[in-house]
Image (cartoon, rainbow, N blue to C red; front, side, top):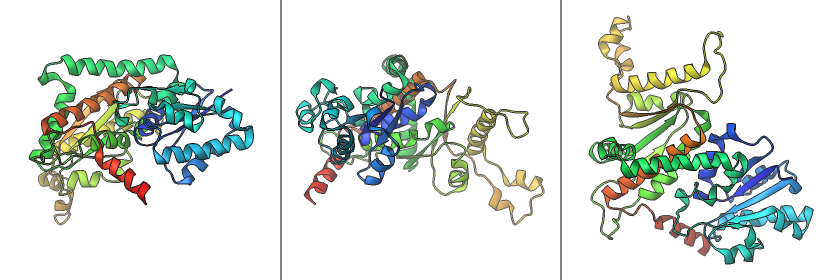
Length: 373
């Protein structure tokens, strides 16, 4: 029986599945788990294979072209790890492919009957809801994965039909453009107050920066202004003890997206036993957005008896922009909705900037140069 799925991919074939697998860990089948290998650094593969039994391990080789150097290098090493114990015949039972290139899948030694295809026009960063999500579906099951897809569809239909003034992806995109192009805010912090979304900012980095990190418009002419916000972030409250100081009192304007949930996926009592740790988490959520917006004046700080020489250091200027995104609970549908929300936001910004959000020639050149060296 298969008990571990090892997904080998990189970029969109890794970041999306990794993020969703962690986000939906509460919905996982207790009898199966997933591990993810992306880096060509052998330490990644060695660490992920540690403690596994080849007989109960399934490898999902996820590569749109099935020619990505890092993925094929790791896949070849994984095949050797398997066949050294079980023999060459085991490949047909322990390797499947997710790809658009049947010939290269077959050349690698995987039967194309075990290949899960998808359209070649689907970019990796937009592919987690395609067959690239196979490793996620293996862990959470078909029913939960269908709920995940339904979340995408819900936002797709909202984006397609809602008036512009009430269209969430349009508004999110316009907010990004407003601060990027008119206030010189080149970055956006993404701050999920859910540890299960620890990889969400990393996922958004590829989705947004690979899509809109362009200096040429779709017609080949130079862009007129700044494009491609720099996305980054950490879950709350970790970020509060790392970089929120800069958000509150630094010289850079950094808009922030706060993502929170009214109901927990896990909860425990507070230290004194009288409250909920999730309520404490969300109290921090609301406190941070309030202080970013309204700050704290010198008069307020002086009234607290603060020494005059300390007052300037404690002033919070406020008027720091943030967007709060709230949902009831982190469910498969809600994760799908969150991803779709940002996908459509990327498209909105790309249209207004006049760029093609669906190519990535900067990435392609790097691959070519690496092979030449």
